[in-house]
Image (cartoon, rainbow, N blue to C red; front, side, top):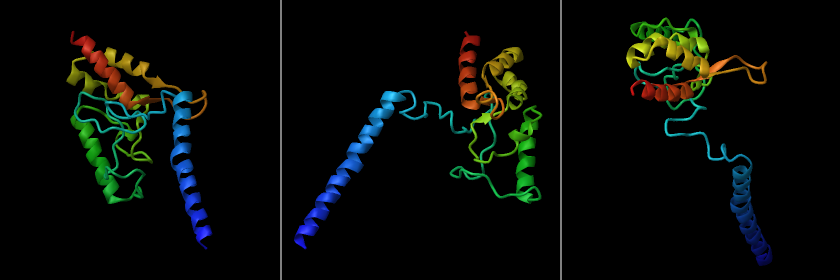
Amino acid sequence: MLLQLRRSIVLVVVFGLFLGLAYPAVEVAAANGIFPARASGSVTRYGSPLIGQDWKGTSWFHGRPDSDNPLATGGTNLGPTSKQLVSFTKRMVAYWHSHGVDPTQELVTTSGSGIDPDISPQSAYVQIPMVSRSTHIPAKSLDNLIASQIHGRQYGILGERYVNVLSLNLALKRLEATVQR
């Protein structure tokens, strides 16, 4: 019995070292060697291009609204007759109208994940008057900025054209720095 116990302990230690240390170290080294730009993750100083940010103020382009619960990822089960959904949507429409924006449907509704980082080009273009007033950047410059940030369909056929809001706002920050000089 002592022999079996000793073998079991040795096996646990060997597999623990192999699967807990050696294998993950090889995986990380391989990822860094093959995909150096992606191996460290996507978080930058300003956020992640894979997760929608909550942009405050009128001097930024905004993405889709987050779900009511900031820790939740995923859509709600609220149907079109839900009073809570109707109330939320009305509040979002009023918010956009107060800033002089005629919002698109996606600017007043959450995405299926609740943290979508992308919006349609149309949703970015409707925000130009608000951002232009706040940043004093001409609307034509913002129009060109959005056009430069539009990503096409994946493989030319999958999905729709989109704008990553984090990338757009980082480009806006660079443009704003050059306009103020």
